[in-house]
Length: 552
Ligand SMILES: CC(=O)/C=C/C=C(C)/C=C/C1=C(C)CCCC1(C)C
Ligand SMILES: CC(/C=C/C=O)=C\C=C\C=O
Ligand SMILES: [Fe+2]
Image (cartoon, rainbow, N blue to C red; front, top):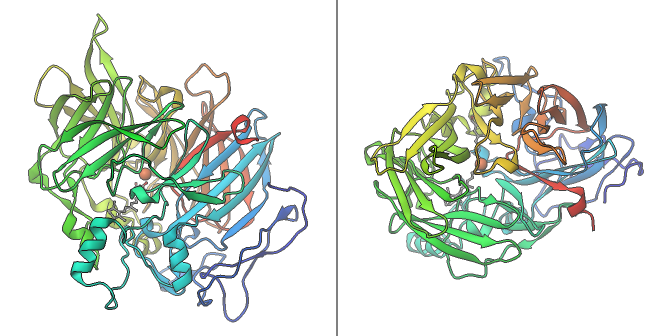
């Protein structure tokens, strides 16, 4: 457990990414911190790839931001220096997952989504904060550490063939799934039974971790026979259940499955057949309502051929099939029947925000409203998230426009649905991604969403924004040069109002420092920041483990 006030052991950098001009690089933690020793890596120490403070590169005045540099050590734990005052009710653990290690020796990965998973923890109690981070010990990460090279297929990185995989061999390993990564670098969820699960898009990359020690406990074994190799990175998790989608690349469609809390057994609920295209649309996430599961079918579709390629294609494992159409399907949770399929305007989204049922005066459901962070049907965001682009374009206004896309899916048999911006995108600088809402409103009518927006010029979402979907306005938090991660909403225990709580975001600052920022969700003003004594790279998704459940 975190031990504030412990001895000041210098934080040794122990991963392969460290080193530096013959000297061992050292992070100076705060006096009241403890560094957990990590066994030395098997890979040889290499050229430094991480430097602090930020370095000028290429003589063009660009600065490599700490957000895009690999995490400096495999694990750390210690008390965090506070600025401001934390609410005393904030009692529990904030966890954030993300791809924080993009180097093996001096080999640098290509894409933001390739990095090995780095789990960050900030535990709040009695107005104090203790921080930690640790690499998730997936098979992919351990093999990379042991062999000094990529051994499994990541988002864009693939193992170099070096003669050991023939094309036939690759096909065999692909369809058995054995060459796919289990690098669970995307999400972290607390299941209804209290287990904490890290996730990515490969099913084998479901890994159980200990929220206190950040230990990798082991693979989450699904005990059913549903199979599948990939699923949505964002299951919908409540106290009682877990919903996810399993795309079928052979017979284009999706299985909708549900798992009861306390079990490892997914049950098949129903199937959605794709309406267009040679393969299902990418389903990084999807929304549900009280009675329905919404299955998006976007023109950015998986591509089995690209899955096999050794070199990345412009859209990685995906292909853009505008001609195939875009659809939204609605499945009844109780019967598994598809009750609506509508064609909608083309769209590109990673993240659905929420969905709810629209009712008439008699209480009959007439339509489903589904909101997402929509990239104006433009796939260029995937290329913008290449590390080289992120590192070289700081300060340039190259972030493609995005908006809150609101779908209206009529349930009266009409063949078409609508897609419109839910508010003027200028309210949030035309940047929009990495969203959260009050968990009590999942699947229900809601008013507020928290997300990252843009203060232009920028090459990446650089604000935290609170969207009011009723007033159609946004409140924005911005600090020059900061790269904030998803503002994660944590409700105040006993709260009645939807925005009574805080939004927590880990911020990688311009000066190479990092801090957990706590905003009052109502006013969106800063309440406090808890500072890490070292740089922390950008990360993706979060969860909250309340104290009562995290304490043994
Ligand atoms: C971090 C993030 O948002 C998305 C990560 C997506 C990943 C890691 C996807 C990985 C995949 C493979 C390793 C092979 C199969 C295809 C695909 C799901 C793209
Ligand atoms: C970080 C991101 C998009 C940013 C653009 O606005 C998407 C991340 C997706 C995975 O979880
Ligand atoms: Fe995501």
